[in-house]
Length: 246
Image (cartoon, rainbow, N blue to C red; front, side):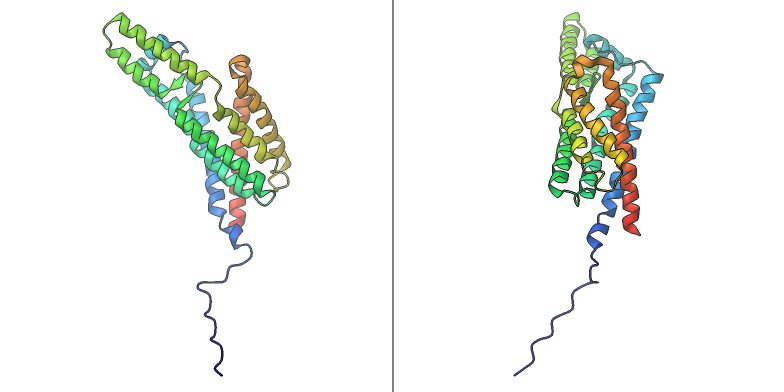
């Protein structure tokens, strides 16, 4: 009777128990850098707002403003809309980092956050009165030759501004995702301070986004908490990525 065949050795080196965790180090680093990019994309237009005129919120006035400050307006628009890209990467990395605490809740938080940023990108606008369509209308306004044409373009601009400054689900979902993920931050080892900040940001953010047309300047509180959370989460993810490499 012949001996049983000897099993072939596995291809490649044997995986250590923590290899799976180590394989996420690159995602953590990407998420960490994205948190800092988010801060930069918020900070640049804030500096521009302080240094240059603020875009008006009335149709004809904003069309004239864009025609004379197009580079400024487009820069602010790109920054405020584009920050959704690093935000969704932070949500993805944070959800993976917190999966060992509660994989189901982490998955919900990550999916809600990613979905909110995809919705925000698809809308392509940001309060106050930043909308790509207004750039197109401004060009048409410059070329229009009659008062009737300009009045029609101004009405169209007012409609876009109203839609831009209205309550959107994207902002509410972003705050909800921060709240859900922050519930897992302390047991996940990312710090009690970040957990408390995140839960406060989530609760205040949901209320601020839902009541944005009513609360006026009070929205600034959430506007400051949001980049703070993304920055601190980014720093935690960078630290986690470095630890996984060693």
